[in-house]
Every structure is written in C-alpha cells, then in structure tokens.
Image (cartoon, rainbow, N blue to C red; front, side, top):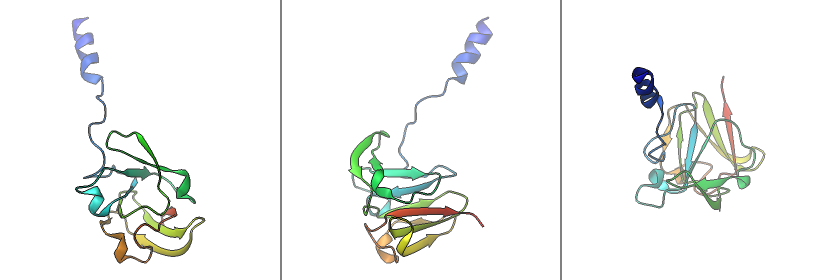
Length: 129
C-alpha cells in the first residue's frame, strides 16, 4: 500500500513552469508580440496547432498562460515553427495579401524582414506536403 501511494505521488504532473519565450512545444507554431521572441519585453505569445483564418478573434497569452485581453490581429513580430509542417503567415484574414512562409524548425525573430512584415499578420496557414 505504501508503494502504491509513493507511485501515485511520482505520477502527479506539476503545473507548466515557463512560457514559450525561449521555446515552442513540438507540434505547434508560436507567435510573439515583440521582436526576438519577446526578449526584454512583456511576455505576450500564442501557440497554434492548426490553421486560423482570422487572428482578430485570438488574444495574446502572458507568461502565466493567462489571456491578456489584447487582440493578436496585426500584432505579431516573431515566429517559431515546430508544427512539423510548413507555415504561412498572411497579411489579411482569409489567407490573402502579402505572405511569408516558414519551414518546419524555422525561427524568425524579426518579421519586419519578411513580406508579411511586422505587426501585419492576420491569418495563419499550416500545411503538410
């Protein structure tokens, strides 16, 4: 009985201890509100596991994984792609306008150097060949 109680204590997972500021979980695409994945800035981020045709209905998360109330539309400044597929950020909702494509494993801390640009992404498309 003591052995079962000890095993139960070991099997209990702890709460998440960090935001994806420095990382992005496998199978996800992470967007960040500031350049260089929020380095030195307020931690505002959001992760995705599928397409999103309109980022205006999403809000940034903070370092404690709580919603900030701030819309993500036209606010992304950096991206990490761990989706296992290619990701395209689009300027307008519905996957239209200027766009930039990121291969699996890509990290771009400065979206201003891309066609989609800084603070202009309004939709996200994850696609696997």
